[in-house]
Structure formats: C-alpha cells, structure tokens
Amino acid sequence: MYPVNLVLTGQPCLVLGGGSVAERKVRRLLDEGAIVTVIAPSLTPPLQALAESHQLSWEARTYQPGDEAAFFLIICATDDETVSQTVSAAAKTQGKLLNVCDVPDLCNFTLPSIVRQGDLQLTISTNGKAPAFSRWLRKRLEQHFDERYSQWLTELAAIRRQGQALLPSSRDRQAFWRQSLTDDIMALVENNEIDAASALLRKRLAAWERKDRQLPPPNAFGV
Image 1: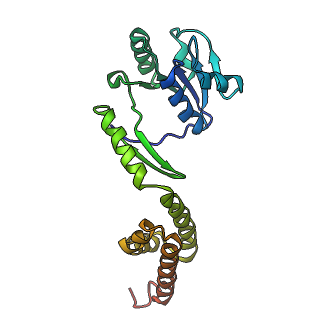
Image 2: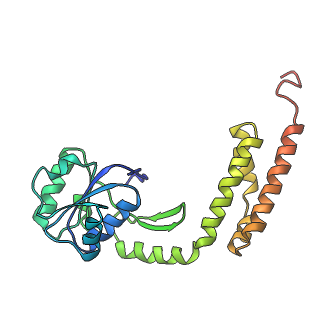
Image 3: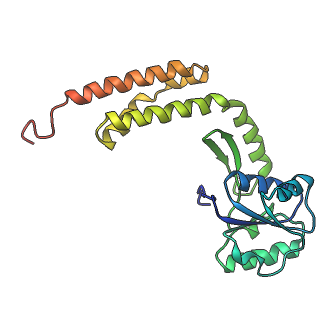
C-alpha cells in the first residue's frame, strides 16, 4: 500500500448503497468537501435528511453499468456481491479510485481508521487484514491524543510562521526544529501545559535567532 492524503474538495464522488455503512462513508466525504452522489433504492433517515437539504444528490435506484464514469472516486457500500464485482471491474478499467467496503481484493484503495483533533490527523491501516485491530488502536489513540494536541498544533503553526520570518534559510529552520522540539517540551504538552511549552519553544527560537545573527557571513574567512 502507498499511503496518500487526497484533496477531495469539489471532487465528484459516488457512493453505492444507502445503509449505515454508506452513511458513514458519505459523512466523511462531505466533511472533506466532496460533491457526493448516492445511488440506492432507499436511504437511512440521516442520509434522507442530507438529500432533502441538498447536501448530496440521491438517485433512487440500483446501480447500472456506466454510473461510475462521471466520478473521481467511488465507494461501494452495498451487500450485492454482483454489483460490487461489476463496479470493481469497471472502475479499475477506467482508472477510477474505488473502495468496496470490507472486500479489499476488489479495491484499489482502502480507508484507514482515523483519529482527528482539529488539523491533527492520525491514520491506522492494517492493509485490510484486521479491521477490528484498527478500531482497537483508534480507540486507544483517541484516549491519548485529545484536544491538547490540537491546541499544541495551533501553537506550533504560529511559531513556525515566526521562525520563517526570523531564520534566513530552510537549513537554519530545519536545524532549529530538530534541536528545539525536544522531549521536555512535549512533556509539558502531555501535562496540558500548552502555554509553558509554547513559551519555552519561543524562547529557544529567540536564542537561535540571536545566535544566527552573530554568525559571520559565508565568505568572512575567505572560503
């Protein structure tokens, strides 16, 4: 498996099926800004509500060959094995991205379990071999990586912007982060002392910037 993060904003995506599994897949696609079409004879009440509020398009019928042609990504969440196999063959022939729920052999991509805190996203994959283990790991990680880490990521983004302004080169910035984002700072984050962790990292950035200004220019020693 080659892991990637897809940008689905504005991309047309198709979900086949209208049950509880399809509902979960639709919600994730909508969260990522996809334009979602669902083809299914019936929908769960939450999917029906999304269709009525025009958050997705619904075609109240079964799959027909060729339905996949207009879409960037297809998720097949139906119990009909014949449909799953037909869609799989057609999508792969057309170079489409396809996931058939719980049948990894018919897919050309699988969906990892996700732990999300704001902009922080952790993904877990077993290459389709043990979904139950993925769920167990996700629950464990959710217990540890709580809102502290979302807050810390916001602080890091602000300090990173400051570092880009203060440190002259990407080499300097990379060296700063390698040497400054250390276990003692992360221990403060673990203890939910976000302000203290941020203050310490900013102090190190200021010291690094002073040190950088004191270095001689590249040719000062005739090299």
